[in-house]
Image (cartoon, rainbow, N blue to C red):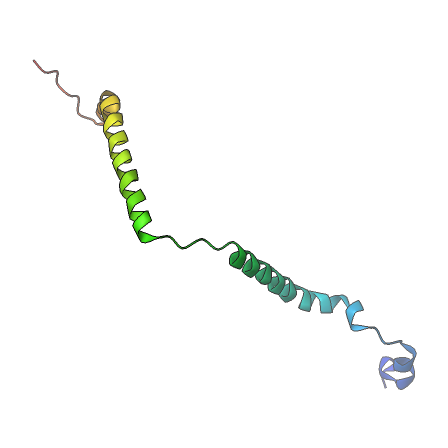
Length: 100
């Protein structure tokens, strides 16, 4: 007979509360942290929801932004045209012949 399994030895060891067992916290702690984090994430998502956009206002603002962007691109293209051409010629293996 194994001495550790005898009723006298088992009766002499006081029972340990479940919250004092470290292995229990390893098993329950991980999923508990995930559940708490998901609740916090759900709370943040519900309270900071993005507003619904009005389609007419969105289209109007988009057209205005595209018009400004097109104008800015045209101005930038005029200013940067020589640099743009020089960059392309520096990267190409063909040396352009000067115009006569």
